[in-house]
Image (cartoon, rainbow, N blue to C red):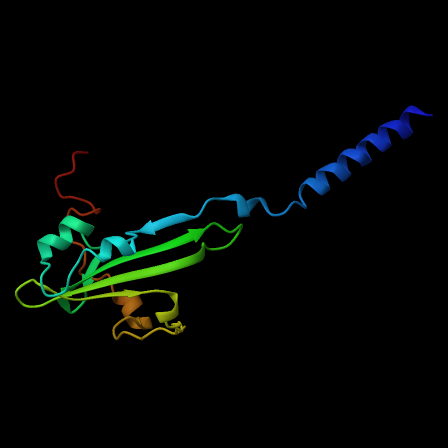
Length: 163
């Protein structure tokens, strides 16, 4: 055998091994799931009794809420999701959960609701912008816009120069 053909076969074998190594079962599947937010276990939620538990009890059992409702400070939400990384893409959401706790005016728990993936609704993104008045600059505004904006001594010659 010639040394050139041996080198060529060795390089071809290495290239084949490298190619087959990239065809695995998907290394990204071995990444562990990541918990984001405040994941609440069902056993913990069961400790809260509507009509008897208070805001202080909720803070002691669950901690601070992820957020409060936009228009109602008497609704606390604990939001979590379990994700897994995907190569060259956004996170793959495996599970979502929202625990909403509503209080009455006295701070007593009125209702505890747990919402999951089945309760979610798709949101369509609108791809347009709202025009705001005053952002269009005309030719004359561009031409004369800087007149009077700068006072003496701001980047110009000063009368107290020493030459």
